[in-house]
Image 1 (cartoon, rainbow, N blue to C red):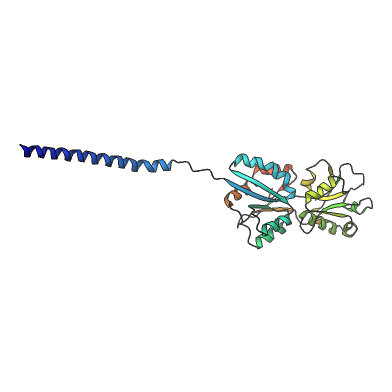
Image 2 (cartoon, rainbow, N blue to C red):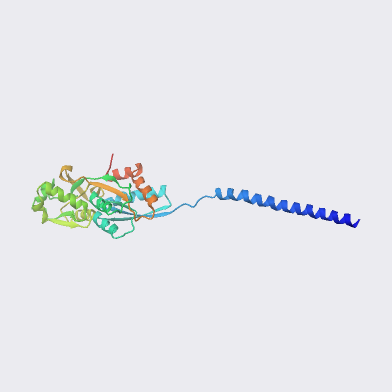
Length: 279
């Protein structure tokens, strides 16, 4: 009798152990199958980036207008602008400035960076075109009607970009050379650090005339255009753009370059007096 009772107890213990082990196995399988599902449905964090864009001074108004348009489409990207003469910006990049995107007002500066291997391969392209114009203060009474008028004794000061670093100054020099009026105009030249400073000299009346881009002249009612230089008198005014190898956010920089080639940016550029390359 005692022996039979012991056997029954042993069977009960065996059954209880089997039930407990089965329960553990079921719980373990449940956790194993549900864990991947939880991880697979997790939403990845939105990637943020800060982009530094070095751009020719003549682009300031257009780029300022484009900034909120891009921020609306890409709220996780912060844009910081650095405007100046293309030559000065080139030097900053060569000296190690942390720049993601560079937009020059001439091919010379970006050619130099490309030769030094500082551009991301395949990102360089021509973005915009511009025109070279002669301007005078809106209330001018000097009688300037064309570039030849700059030789008149009534014209005392002519605002030009510094040719060594400012593309607008280089184009202006080409125009004056082509028209064979360099010598009589040279003594009247007031050189500016960038094209916007040249514009300011004319706006304020500190210069009787100035040679700038069409986009600059259209940015203010304080000056008027009296002549547009023939394209035969100067090199094509082209604005190339590229992503720099110094960029820590190459993909975001590429995306911004593409945005600048899109319809929204094109509308802004054309309103500001630029021509979109290829259009």
